[in-house]
Image (cartoon, rainbow, N blue to C red; front, side):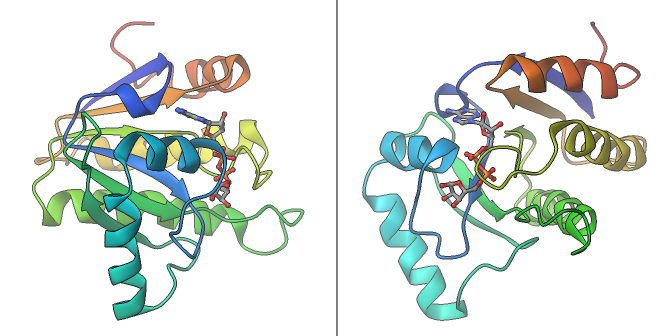
Length: 176
Ligand code: AR6
């Protein structure tokens, strides 16, 4: 598994699946969620509706897969990050389970290339540095044994996340 870091807009990224930082309704919203729904077109929300009608809301830490519709990416993995409540509500474990479920879905559907935004670090208020460390620790653990996922690209939208990811991921990146 190769790990890459870029600054940019995830909606223009070509890969097997981009990850969306959604909310439990899966009906779209602001931030990266709004941008992904706008770029994918109205069929995306229709597929999300079918999923929530069938299995109910997507709880924090869980993830579901849809098609990508008008996106360049073939699929979208929608995950719901934790809302930061001061660190006393298992937020780190919930964020970690977002990433575990992203990897699980990638295995299940044989997705080789993923692009992932900085889940929970916008509206949901998770501290950016702790998020970067949590994500790096998780991928440090899975990278060695990974046989299906070939490339994971972390797409940072803001300079602060890019700087923090560069630091937390320094040992995981091929080129710094
Ligand atoms: N490409 C990549 N990253 C982006 C983009 C983009 N186009 N736009 C924003 N980001 P947020 P959350 C970054 O707030 O904190 C929504 O309303 C942004 O800089 O999008 O998980 C949902 O519906 C930040 O670092 O997601 C939920 O209600 C990161 O994406 C709620 O927000 C995440 O910020 C989820 O909050």
